[in-house]
Length: 184
Image (cartoon, rainbow, N blue to C red; front, side, top):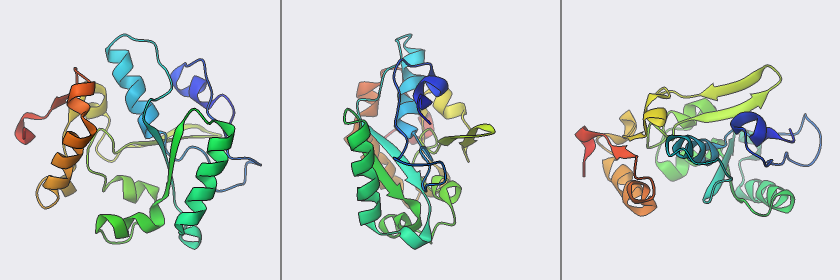
């Protein structure tokens, strides 16, 4: 899928595909979350889009290849093709262990258990067009509202609060705001 980012975001740059043919798993991208968030934030600020300055998360799902070494191999391949991007590849078939959840059934199931509604979005380009998984909708993403998903409203709220503080989103994105019911 050469030219993926320009087609998705109108950017004058491209993200690579995994080396090889169209049948290779995982396909890129099962998620380009950081790119979408940065693109939407820059649109609100009326700045030209650019490649993300943080990492680009690529998520996929395959129970038979859930070893971290597989993710590392994919990251190395992506890094070789596009070294200016900090790739973060995670097979969601094992991420439930790190997150203290029941096993995820798919990328869509994993996305539904992510901490923030605005980041719980996955997109990939298929032959039919752009496929978006957004279990909590896109309103918070486009409105630049930061709020926890239902899983992080109570029992895991400290995780949400820690992420907001450590990632410094409210400092880096002045138009982003914390939903009033979750002001820390």
